[in-house]
Image (cartoon, rainbow, N blue to C red; front, side, top):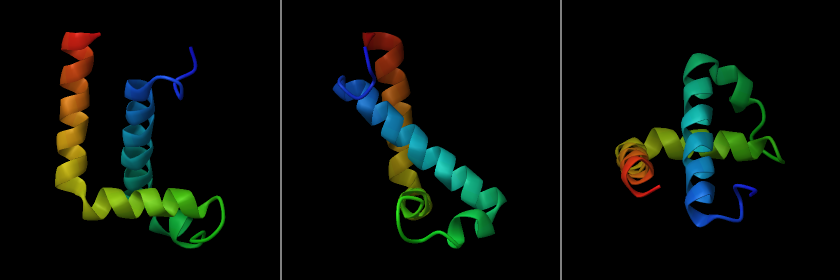
Length: 72
């Protein structure tokens, strides 16, 4: 089943996208900073969300990991 049709899988994909973009922006800031508009701007926005809301994103990742271990 495609991950976008299952709500839990969709949330996992979004969290992984935010965490990955934040990590890439931490290592290579110029890679995402030059693409702030268009389709590539989505990755820049995900990196901003990960940087500014990092305690909440971390809590969501932890909750998602616990949910995957115990409920799937």
